[in-house]
Image 1 (cartoon, rainbow, N blue to C red):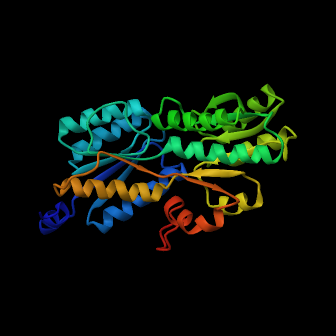
Image 2 (spheres, rainbow, N blue to C red; image 1 turned 45 degrees about the vertical axis):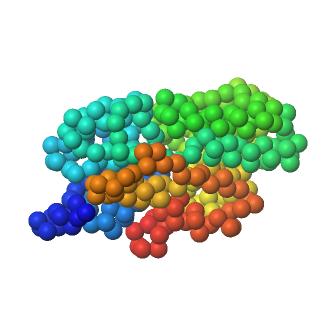
Image 3 (cartoon, rainbow, N blue to C red; image 1 turned 180 degrees about the horizontal axis):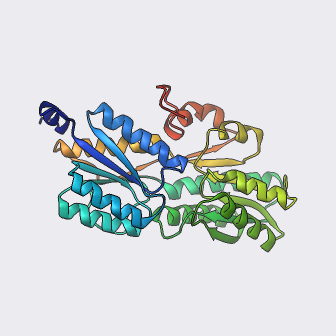
Length: 313
């Protein structure tokens, strides 16, 4: 079958896709966008990104805008799983196929959803933490969580997997705080609250990565550096140094560049009339001092989007 790219190219213009993302200012989503853009271009598509700044209202406005533009396909990383339902309903009425790249949806019709195995990945990083606590003789201490919104399906899965790892070693989770605006100050305050609430706290698990410095600063401000461990979900380029140095115990690293590539590829296959898996889960890398050297090439490309083509960070 002739591809949409080839057919539209014959008419003088490439077919158009749109990528709706919750907040391009968060590095994870920027890396995913670069994966979408790279694979879409390789397959002959023009693709435009629309960042909602974590605002469901702005996100809805972008949906209306791309529908009016008449794009051939929509890839979406929604602000929340519930907001995604409205996106899917509007796109279905307009006859525009949708591929979801992470976060998930509470309902609606879509071509495919590309996600990380959040629960397994969070369990893996929980095991790393449990082992680190055991090595230090701190299993009687507790753990605090600074979480992404728990109304997101991926947030719920992360918490469930991590809690399972803690329960397996009888480690107490003393509190959880949810991020809303993902700012430095919010993360600092949440970490400080957890530290004040429980003097027995021995670790903080941050369910994101870009505000790791706020958590480290809160630990230092409380005079607990060296006494409270920090680990994250996702990764930043500096983690290639911070994990070997022991500043971070480890990180559960999703592969956003790879996810973006897979989302664009799934849309292309659908538009060609090929069968597409409706659900695709990619592994999360549980990274610690023990395996980071071996995993570095994979981390650089699939996690950090450092592809060597001059377009990475």
